[in-house]
Amino acid sequence: MGTKHNGHLVGWLEQNKKSDDISLGAWGHNGVKLPGRLVAVIPGSFGLTWALSFDPVLRTSAEYTSRSERNETMLRPLVRVISRGSSLGCFRRTQVDASRSRRHVLSSTRKTSALQWSSASLHTSIRAGARLADVEAETSCSYLEGIKKRGFYLDDIYQHVKLDGVKDLKIVEDGKHLQITWEDGHVSRFYSMWLRHNCHCGACLPHTSTVLVDFTKLDENIRVTSAKMEGDEVIVVGWTGENAEEKYHEGPILTKFLRYHCYSDAADKQRREQRAMPFFEDKTIPVLEYNDVVNSDEALYKWLNALSEQGICLIKNVPLNKEEMLKTAERIAQVQHTIYGNTFEVETSPDPVPENAAHTRIGLDLHMDQIHYESPPGLQLLHCVKFDECIKGGENFFVDMHEVAKKFKEDEPEAFYTLTRVPSTANTVDYKRARPAHVRIQRPLIAVNHKDEIVSVLWQPMLIAPLQVPERDVELFYKAYKKFYSLVKNYQSMYVHRLRPGDMISFNNRRVSHGRRAYTENGHRLLQGCYINASEFQSKVQMFHNKYGGGRWPVRNGSIDWQ
Image (cartoon, rainbow, N blue to C red; front, side, top):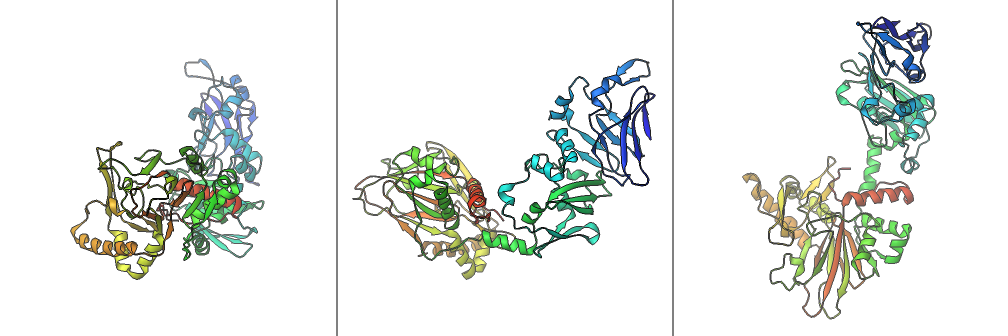
């Protein structure tokens, strides 16, 4: 069957009634029937979509003519986009620039040359940036090869997926779920929309981590109607929806992707066991050498591991200049800028009214830095440049705040949950400092996730602003705050260290609070410091776990991440 455009047939489509296979082509002005190579075809259903490739149609498009109502001859490049209408074989056409070469059109990522095909029963789009060449290649080879060409086969992760293969595929609950039984006996059940969201085809996932699934075109009750293996590593899934623009879609999903992201209770439990923070009775600070850390990935991984598992590590013999501190920090990531700049110094100020209590000799209670930020710094590095031996005091001490919060939850559950519910305010408001600042945020001091696990503790009593909450919560907050404050103040399980020139103490600012004992005036004490973003730190930990640590999940780092 075909359709006419100004008196000339421009496309034809035939279905073999015995095999249900689809043929597709175009008509030239001389009535010659030109077969087209299919870009995409899903046999066996009238409610699907087909599209011609550019070869041979575009290559000879200048030869095809059609006449307008005014009988003017016009060049008409045939079939850029073919859309099947409500009846079989009813095409409409969209023009393309016939002057472009085939190579140019196939490699272009401009919106005007993005292939789109649609029908009353199916809408699939390859948007700008999803190349026709990618789609054609994926249909001419296996889905697995296409996924690898688009960079979505993540070897660094999937090499650690313990996978013996798929034993059984079963569509259950009338297509609401796809159930996979793996060779090791583990069972995964994936919701139909979850699977559709994670389709690995070139239209939905043209590049790594670029998901282009348009939910406005999906039926909220979409069903899985087919699932079959392509080799050992790909499941090809078909979805059907009735009350949306997209009536049918078919695409591949990697089996290793599914096993890695399985959300069964058993898989979730295993991940959470790896993510749980360990706590240590022995409060000995791990120690590494500067030369090892900057020159060896093995030593760098030890540093990352210590910061992830224990929250603290000492690097010794760091050269006494800021550049070497930054060089060490940037083994993990670029430093995080704050209102203090990219780096800062801690030493006694001659100013009678210094802008920060750290620039005095007074003792500093346990605190975390910069909790007034939406994303407080992750790691903090303090590099000792000068600390005269004649000075008495000045030792630093460190407490694992997640360890304290865990005890608080066990001993004072009512007060604990008050601090997870009632928000306090932290701020730094100073218009006279070198870098004027008015930074303010309101949120609870403690956060738990949907599994009631502690994911964040924020502690800086010196930056707590006046409480602004409903009146009924004011008394409840202060009673709970006093209990937690007292527990922190009197907590005995801590790390203690007196820094010496060349020492660089590094710690997770989202987990470990730090303080300083008062010190005497006779001598010079100078520390240099910088911060690293929590997410960038966690990224580095995960990459090194994948490279050296068997692919395990990193311990939570206190960054309000609910995983």
